[in-house]
Amino acid sequence: MNLFGGTINKLERSLDYAAAKNNAISNNISNADTPGYKAQNVVFKDALHDALSLQAKQTNEKHIPFSTSHNYSYLITTNSNTTYNHNGNNVDIDREMTELAKNQIYYNGLVDRINGKFGSLQTVIRGGN
Image: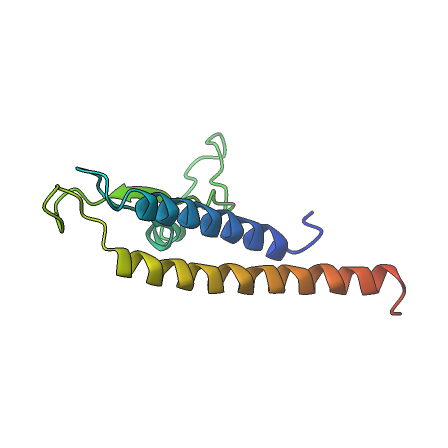
């Protein structure tokens, strides 16, 4: 039985993704002048799409059943095909700062939503007061 209906778990996974994306962006920004450094990106949507598109059919009751609970993970990719700077580095600082701002807005939205969920639970526990 899932006490919270899976919403808080999904929000938690989304916060994990936002934190990982923030780490990757921070690494990119801090290595903007490092010769040969290649920018990293965290990809979640593709992993989620792949996980949701899996279809399995249990053809025998002795087979292990296919679980509908997915481990929503994210991938850290490195773009090694481009070079923007003369030193072999491909960090675009303007793009990274834009991604950092977008990720911060996303993270803040998730925190507000999870706070709302916990606030609702607190109201129920207190008996509606």
